[in-house]
Length: 307
Image: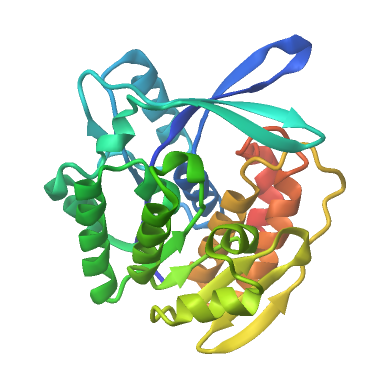
């Protein structure tokens, strides 16, 4: 599947643990992380772009320079005077992570306020990715704008991938969260939920219940991630199980789901084989969690790119 890949969402300043009690600065966020891994595993000539909003300050300049340095295009990014990127800090205990956030004045909250700019990014793209976090940070009017434009893309036959990536702290209330996540899924062609989230926030008793609920929305392609318990694919009503890959050790689970999403999409775009894409993505995710931070260094990715 040729054509531009576009990921839509928020990239943030990341502070993570380093040696000697120090903190190391980086840039990450679920939609950007996904774009990073899509870029890593697609041919260089296939464009991958990121759509967000940033400020006009120094840290915004540094963020865009970093994004461009990974080979991801930033020509569609909005610049919003008086705003800055959000920031988060990773706290680790036994490989599991928790976060502290400072994002209330994030420029990315305004990414869909300009519908024309959003449409200019989506129209030349053949594959679009967004997430529940993308929806959670937007005002209701901006959510409506984003879903309308994504709905146009789906109607035009484009591949629209959505990860519900449920983060209740970002939502005003549980009902709004469930309603908006459901609307986001309905606008997609491929939905990539994590079963733990679906069980917790939608009361799904089983993976089959999750699949049935999303299929009732008209979703034909589902990739249900269940951590170490594996992945269940539902395509055209047919279900296939793909085993997870055991990590040699768990250092940091940050970005595991995002790396799976990006690796899956890249391989699926190239081959159209959803089972092979899931197997490939499982191997990538198992390697990512052996490292600190959400983004595996390029040197560690080269072997996968040739696999």
